[in-house]
Image 1: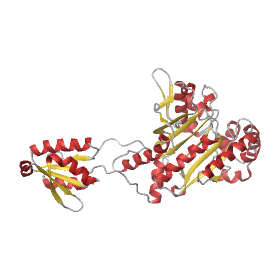
Image 2 (image 1 turned 90 degrees about the vertical axis):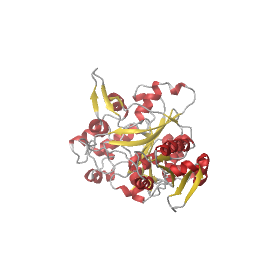
Image 3 (image 1 turned 60 degrees about the vertical axis):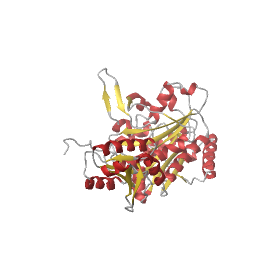
Image 4 (image 1 turned 180 degrees about the vertical axis):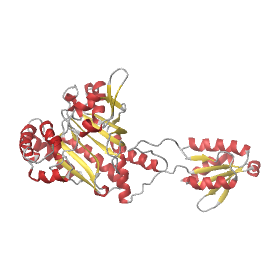
Length: 420
């Protein structure tokens, strides 16, 4: 037994479960690759200031949940709690926005870290696939990203999820709403920490999940009643495009999400089979974020989909993914010369795209066949001294038990034909 365990609130991905996670990531990434999004990978840690400016100093992520460290040189760094700020920083640093082909469309996949109270669906280390479209103020982009996320979930076989949609306005109409909301919130019975949040970012109070707070918010003013004509038109176009694409959604005037950088379109995918941790993905438009972190004005939109919670959603719906076989052919050698010949044969099969494995360690026939059955392979290749003398290898169907002799020289082609 190991002396060490995984840190609290984290998990290890191990076979066979890891195959499901890989399949979910691939399903999320596939629509993006078909839509002109290029892959980007950023460091696992960034400057604390990047997240303080971008995510928001009043957010729980920055004030309570970031893992921070000080380097020997005195730099203040944080393990990345989310992906958008890092990706936008990387795009700006590389001057991708100056290439003359806006929007810059990027997707990414990786691990993120937040110091939270561990529970099912909420971990201190979690996995996301994200996408960002940087440098264009176009409702078609907002709709495109929402459709791509919707199609990814549907491709996995999920059906019990809902799309919540809202608009948070822009720098023209948000200030008026902010003042109206602050005036309302100041009249509520709130704790000192929440009252302080009213002055910094009152929209964050709407995102408070505590029942006592939500009960008092029943009469709170809604952003939709304060939208300027331009934001109204933008939001209506997003709604119309989603309807045309056959993507159902629910208008949720209280949806604000947990990050300060969102403007206009805000959305969240939720799954009712997950209890309190129902969000499986979400995002929105962040037209001012580039300026917040020292760049030019670059209106942008993006999302992040939770791999962990999507796996939980699949489990809640009882969806079994059609995963590719880890092993299609399992080779069982009997003797030293047979081991050498089967090693060569297995190598050739792998080069031909066949998932093949070999019984290692000089196992006897009985134990080797147990390993073959446990591997999930469709066929076993058996080679002994008599087979070598005759120039054949035995191809055994592990489902039916049928066994046929195949010429060694034609074994690769024979196996491929059987697997078709």
